[in-house]
Figure (cartoon, rainbow, N blue to C red):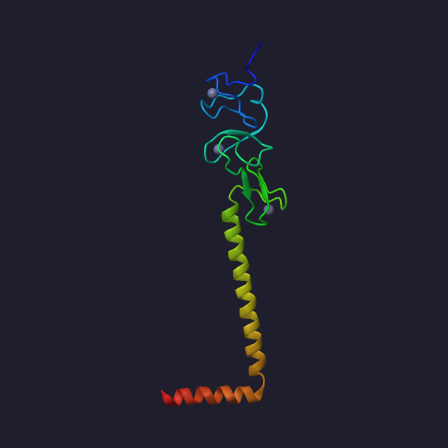
Amino acid sequence: MSESDVECEGCGAPVGAGLHACPYCQRAYRATASSPSVDCPVCGADNDTSRTTCAACGMSLLVCCVFCEQSSSRASVRCTRCGESFAGAEERKKTRDEEARREQMIELAKKGAQVAQSALSDPRTRSLVGGILGKLLDDD
Ligand SMILES: [Zn+2]
Ligand SMILES: [Zn+2]
Ligand SMILES: [Zn+2]
């Protein structure tokens, strides 16, 4: 009777359910070696992609999307909800936020200019502003 399915071929440790390789000797299990796996970020164990936590240490194997906050398996290349790829996501998010902020500033500046222009086209405002400016200049 063969025990190769329940014991690591390398060190004889029990085969961990949901793992693709032995957490003790790092030897890949024969039965699952060819199927896709995901590495635990903490202990490096080779986990089945269907797992949400590491079978060896219990660490979460999910990554949180910085764009929509959806959790996807570390094995995924992109977010399962919004489709943003995880590679360089933080950087991309920062750049996008900065762009959005810049656009907002431009919009605000445009609006401010419009308000100032329409205010100055009113003769009463113009004389008021002129008076204030005149006083400021007098004080100088
Ligand atoms: Zn082993
Ligand atoms: Zn782990
Ligand atoms: Zn997302």
